[in-house]
Image 1 (tube, rainbow, N blue to C red):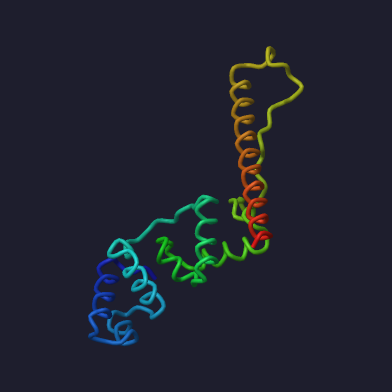
Image 2: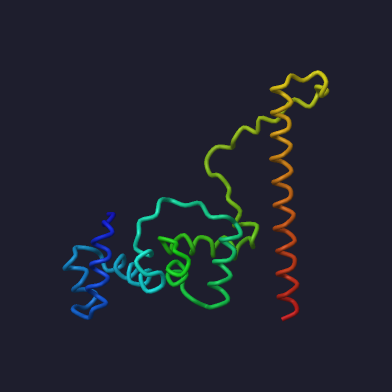
Length: 170
């Protein structure tokens, strides 16, 4: 259940004022203890901005890796990291950690779930001079996407290699 910002703020301020225990505050505001703990942690790290509702966000692989490294380097909980990086749910970070441990930084690259998408790869048997303007644009779009993907894959592999070298040196 979503709670309005005003309820979140009032509950956090009530608890932090020392007027009641966590359980008493949760009962008083009709919220669960777990969300209240998250709100308090977010408030302590980010102030009132930590209590604002955020729409579902998509995180870049670089950001995911930064969060994972923060957790591992500082030996902190995913809940602490979610408060520090303003990620609404620590389960997201736990999933990133699981993926990172099983497949390294490459595993943090977004992959769409569900049925495979049609690639719309242009016909390769036509010469450029025989293609229509629309076909040429589609070919260009496809080649740009393919190039960007390969660059990203190369960067992630290099980063993985550097990380492995640093771990060997330690």
